Amino acid sequence: MFDYGYFRFASKADVLDTAVEYWNPGKTKFWSDAGIDLVIDRRDGYFIYDMSGRRLIDLHLNGGTFNFGHRNAELVATLKSALDYFDMGNHWFPSLARSAFAEKLVKTAPHMKYAIFGTSGAEAVEIALKTARYATKRRKIVSIIKGYHGHSGLSVATGDDRFSKIFLADRPEEFHQVPFNDLDALERALRQRDVAAFIIETIPATYGFPMPNEGYLQACQDLCRRYGTLYIADEVQTGLMRTGVMWGWQGYGLQPDMFVTGKGLGGGIYPISACVVTERCGGWLHEDGAAHISTAGGSELGCVVAHQVIDILQRPEVVSNVHYVSDYFQRALAEVMAANSDIFVGVRQRGVVIGLEFDHPEGAVAVSRALYEHGVWAIFSSLDKRVLQFKPGVLLDPDTCQEIIDRLQAAMPRARALLRSSRRAV
Image (tube, rainbow, N blue to C red):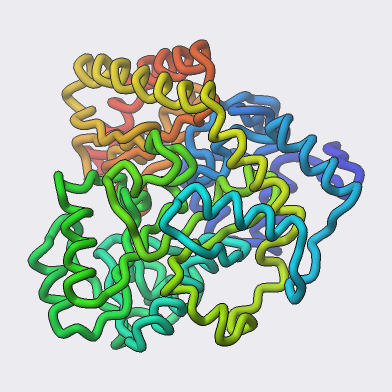
């Protein structure tokens, strides 16, 4: 019997049966069919434990949500302390925690003016798109093919049709997509001067972390300026020091009109997201500050935790560790690839944002399973299954870095066997 006080289950099979019946049958069966029978029980730092007690190193991090690991001790203590004084708060009124965190967040990007809070990255994107329409008095939004910006009403229309068609939200007339790294296509989309915003992840995550060509992002921003379109940087997965600087766009010398952040902003402890905007974009906050309402957006508890998240990321020793982890994996992965070049053909990396490319249409699916069997959890990219999302945390220690590489090396023969059987099946 697995007794958690609030609820109990007889076995892992009991949990899976309950998930199928009451939660999400499609997602539960997908992982079961893929040979991944994970039900996360205990979690500690960068380690997660299945109900069976089996330990896995977490390289998925739920898109960077667990940038600091699971149940980071400093953030747990911060939340516990905050509960002695704060609760969610009331979104209608000025707030101690909300005001303090807004100031701290805006000061990480000096050309920005206001922080507008939500609960998720998708909500932050919604805020950004609505803000762009207000500021420009235009309706059209441009994004990239295979981009991803969330699953809510407006945000899902900017992404891949896998996520929009099922809800009849694909290709509304105000939304247009262009290929990544194609400046000519972007200019054709903008030249009518009727586009409110161009939104792009600094490095597209769900697409498998393809890297922007040299000068591409700067040229995108320049085109936006030329045609009166606002540039929105989606930093939900590339922000918070994951590219080696606080915000990925800073490493490319950009000054977006807005950027959005979420996931790791709450440290895996309390959900919070934000859309950070310039003075011009924040005009609606003066005209009608209640034009966007989010009861839980900018919860005071979330603001206290996120304030501490930014504080931790600005510590010199943490900045130094991010660069250590990045450099370590750059060297080590090059060696692993050289030893397995028949299947492992590329590394896409900026900081600890890393994608491993395999020479098979679903190569990363096989490697993900092989790693799972060898004690590492890393997920394949939903929109390019050749690429494994390999996402080390910013606080990883040298011993765990080495263990990850050792387990990756050990998993490669199993990955090769899975790929051989996959080719035979085809």
